Image (cartoon, rainbow, N blue to C red):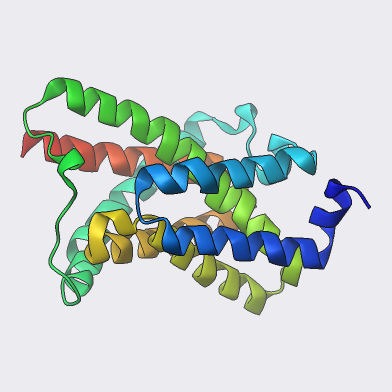
Length: 213
């Protein structure tokens, strides 16, 4: 049995997902998770010869309609985060971001932040957490209505854990966004276009507000 067959087996999927969540729990820095978590996901996709289109990433899906839909969803995310999620998260921990997000009035940091947010967050995180992780759970447990609900919740928790470097408040907010993004991915027929645009625009709004102070 070669590595591809192992990773396609139920046992292989279970071990892979366990390793993924162990990294998410114990690697509490953005650099640590990036150096381990994302290579794990991308290596799995490569070894199993999964095409980008298989997880919902297609250039032809970046239509005007999908882009505008993603922008609209990002605006909904922003107001939901500000007026619903943040008040809830603040009951558990005060809001606060690491020093790397201190970009008020710093144009170079702002522009670098935007670039990285689109490359690492909008594209890479959506490929890993929606395209890869959701489909690995589908490979393991199937895709009935109740199983979709479980997948949405579990992958949302995983998304929150990876953002624990932002503190408890940030992790809770990210967990909610992860749940919304998973729902969006399913509602879009497992297409990544709208989740990518929504993620990128949401982060752009946040970075712009940080820059403006």
